[in-house]
Image (cartoon, rainbow over all chains, first blue to last red):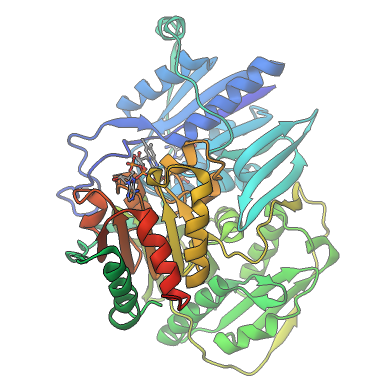
Length: 249
Length: 319
Ligand SMILES: Cc1cc2nc3c(=O)[nH]c(=O)nc-3n(C[C@H](O)[C@H](O)[C@H](O)COP(=O)(O)OP(=O)(O)OC[C@H]3O[C@@H](n4cnc5c(N)ncnc54)[C@H](O)[C@@H]3O)c2cc1C
Ligand SMILES: Nc1ncnc2c1ncn2[C@@H]1O[C@H](COP(=O)(O)O)[C@@H](O)[C@H]1O
């Protein structure tokens, strides 16, 4: 079995967002870069499949120089190969999906694992787009995955419950929290990863379909009000305020 | 033409779909366009309701093969409809189904896709979208460069507006049904409860709830308010049996209810990212320095175990 795992390098979730001088991108000074949290779960799932039934795991990222660090970590975790496709962040999920599809096409991956959403861009789109471009099945926002010979069963989050999906391989599966608990790399893995190569490719010209024209911070919420008095008085005045001032109940 | 992919539930138009339709009508009026509402399923009974929210045309794909949702099947159906009608814009509500199918259709059409938009307008006949990024810590204005534009609308953001149109219905050709993946069943459905992302009132609990059983207090308050219960990640991770589906925040649900009541939640940046779009925020916390108070419209410094039952009792009219 051959598995491709797509990983995105994103700003740490604690990052205080500042807008760059161009007015449309993130000011990357002081940003700490991490692997997008759900992508770690996609990677973990690939490793578990490798351990339970044997698989060749290829980690891929569309990124820049600094993204090598993410791929080095994927190798340390247990990926067999790592590929960096150089391309500047375009903010267009279809552009990323096209780059990934161009790479994956004709390489007969049985399974392609991604995070359901990459932190920051928050598109939640590359997985389904990639599935469409490759003409394969998808299960998006998955909390449970079982593989058969050339079929899969997945559970995905839907309103008010979980949907059980059944489909055929090859398939694109996007990970949601609950699927697994990602591991940390072992010391042996970290040392071993230093010797493994990271293949580097250039993305072909990409036609963008959407772009950010301005990035703004949300207006600060007005200073709130702390209520006073005994617990009973505060509870009563809250109800009155919600009814008569805020008019939300 | 703007096509809006609409969802039915128990024979009624789902509210997030009514919101998308209302917004499509507003856009169409500003640009001299037509609005078509598209329904797909084993039955499209209830789809007439779309005319009330401004659909000039109701497209119905009714077939046994569509009884269960399939990403590839529905994506092909939607893309075919967009092409057949030469529509330039496709909207869907940002529901579990909308977010599953819309990006797939966009890829099929070579169209740009904006997820979870909170604002839309037309410029030179093309869609412009405003959408949250970094879990709501920033907002991006986006321009499309593709001839077809696809977007999902964030639930609870766009107002539902009635704008009745005469009923015009048309059947769409049924697909063959040899789909690559199909939903087989819906598990653990909490009957009748709306999803967090669509709820108008949310009462959330954090580590301050001390144990899972205490969430009963929040359920009672939520019931009295007609709302649903959410949780912080600390509460979900504590092993209290609270499912991840209830988690609000950066790695949970991003919500925008009218009223969000945070009980025993400190207000960590990752939690706030998921709920700072709420219209009114109430914080109940015994620590006056808790960061949640900085974004709360109304703050109560106190013991939630004392305050929450008082609120419930007051709402139920027992003093
Ligand atoms: C990558 C990443 C993603 C994350 N994603 C999320 C996410 O999606 N959602 C999320 O919520 N968190 C998320 N977190 C975790 C986040 O950083 C915080 O740890 C978490 O939100 C804290 O939850 P809490 O406020 O319930 O707990 P605490 O921070 O422990 O706060 C508990 C609060 O309860 C108060 N309290 C205690 N007893 C009482 C009482 N009797 N009455 C009133 N008040 C009381 C205390 O004063 C305290 O303020 C994420 C973290 C990381 C690193
Ligand atoms: N630049 C990238 N390189 C590799 N994978 C990516 C990239 N961008 C997105 N992905 C994958 O697609 C998923 C969804 O991303 P998005 O659609 O941007 O929210 C992520 O969780 C990653 O698995």
